[in-house]
Structure formats: C-alpha cells, structure tokens
Image (cartoon, rainbow, N blue to C red; front, side, top):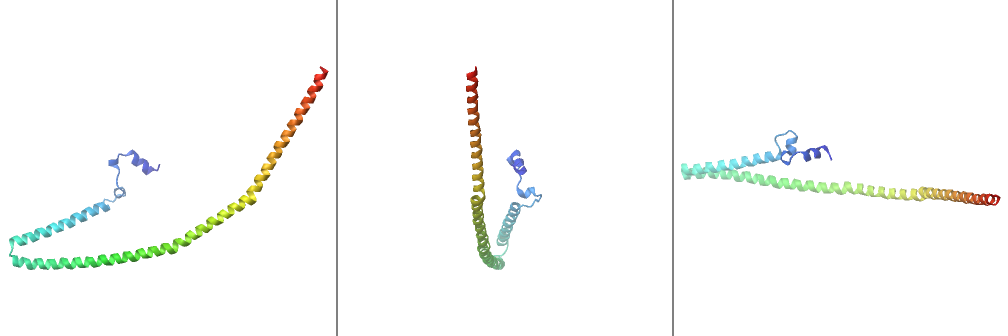
Length: 173
C-alpha cells in the first residue's frame, strides 16, 4: 500500500480532503462553479426585481420602451453566444479529426514495429532453444546417465567382491 492509501485508510471518511484542498488552493473547480451559478442567479433575480419595480412604480408606456431596449440587448448577446458556441463546436470537431488522424498515423507504425519485434523475439527464442539449449540439455542428460551407469556398475562390482570374500571367509571358518 502506498503512503497516501495508508493515510486515507487510517483517517475517517469525513476527514479525507478533496484534491483541490490538499494542494493548498482554496479555489477548487466545484467552489468556482458554485460561485458562478450563485452570481448568475443573483443577476437574474436583480433584473426581475428591477423590471417589477419599473412596472409597478412608473408609467407603463415609458417602461415598455426601456424594457424593449433591454430585451434587444439581451437578444443580441444571446445571438453572439450562439455564434460562439457554433464556432467552439466547429473547433472541437476539427481537433477531434486531427486527433483521430494522429492516432491513425502515429500509433499504427508503432504497433507494427512492436509486432515485428515480438516476431523477431519469438524466432530468436526458438533458435536459441533449438541450437543452444537443446544440445546442452541432451549433453547434460547423457553425462547424468553415464554417471548413474558408472555408479551402478561400481556398485555391482562391490557387491560381487563382497559376495566373493564372504564365500572365501565362510569356507575357512
């Protein structure tokens, strides 16, 4: 187990900190997203309250003209955002196409080289097995068998000598 795993295993789950707070930064992605969302909601509520106040406390004909100007500005901003989103999607599609092309052109030769290397290694292992290891194993087996044969031959000779001595000593007694 790594040290980080040990420290997480020994501390209670409530005390385990997120990666953004461990780095010493108090502004994590989640915290920024929460603040941005709260800001957007606050702006929407403020705009609604301003519109409500204008509608209740002023003349409706004067307020309608002001609200139409605000509405037109918001429509223009939303149109620009739509254009930016379409441009962003187009850039994303181009980047994905470039990535796919890169994967095709760069990884295929690497995989082909790896396959060729594996084939060469397999051939080398077969060659070494057939021309080096097999003769050594056969020679070792031959000498092991020869040693056992000679040991058994010596054992038979000793046994014959022992029997021959016992016969001579048995006749003298």
